[in-house]
Amino acid sequence: MNLFQVFIISLITGLAYLQRRALGDCQLERPIVLGPVIGWILGDFNAGLLIGANLELVFMGAQAIGGSVPSNVAIGSALGTAVAITSGTGLEGAMVVAIPAAVLASTFEMFAKTISAFAVHGADKYALNDNSNGIILMMWLGNLVHFLAYFIPTFLALWLGADYISNMMNVIPANVMAGVKAVGALLPALGFGLLLNNLGRKEILGYFFIGFALAAYIPSFGVMGIAFIGIAYVCVWAFNKLQMNGGN
Image (cartoon, rainbow, N blue to C red; front, side):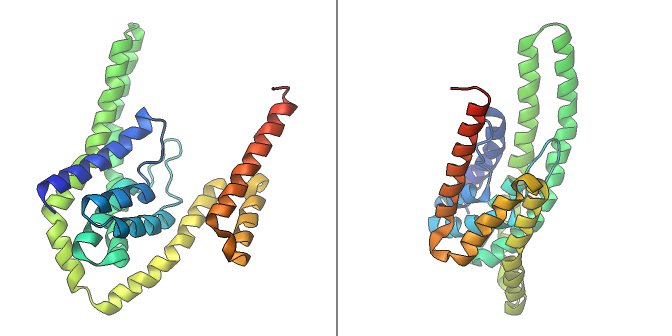
């Protein structure tokens, strides 16, 4: 990777965080989005798409709910995809890099939240003086700190450590990589488990098993078919709820 590619990948990773604040969280920091983009930057869109899709299954349950700090999906996905493509190790290499990188990078976000607390106190002071511009300034100051907590670690890891990581990946024995591949095949189940830990309420758990049964016993139905059924059900439910509340 050249310096320009490293800068662009790091910038996109940082902006992936900012979209949560500016665009209402369009999920642009997910692996399924970042993977293909980084693959395109590095000249291998198909590999980026494949890696991003598989990492999405792994990190499916990593969601920032409230003030929680889960694994840093954006940094893990960026580093895993970039190193896997440049080293030619594919999905197995992405797993080796992405998962520990995501866990480690969560400490940077926690540090950014700590620093941003000072901006919150500053916003409180501006609020006492009815200074809306000061409040906005403090808000974007906190966002800038978080952006740097994404941008700087990604840039340094790719610029200073990408070659070392790539060389390390190339000397890992084949049997170790086979073990990583086997573990990687199990990680999607962990991702679903983490997701159910947050969404596993008795009121909606039945719909999960309906979707699982359709996917398991009617393979030709496909994920898109299940998604369309889910969307249709939500629309019907929302319409009936609106009618019950006297809406138009």
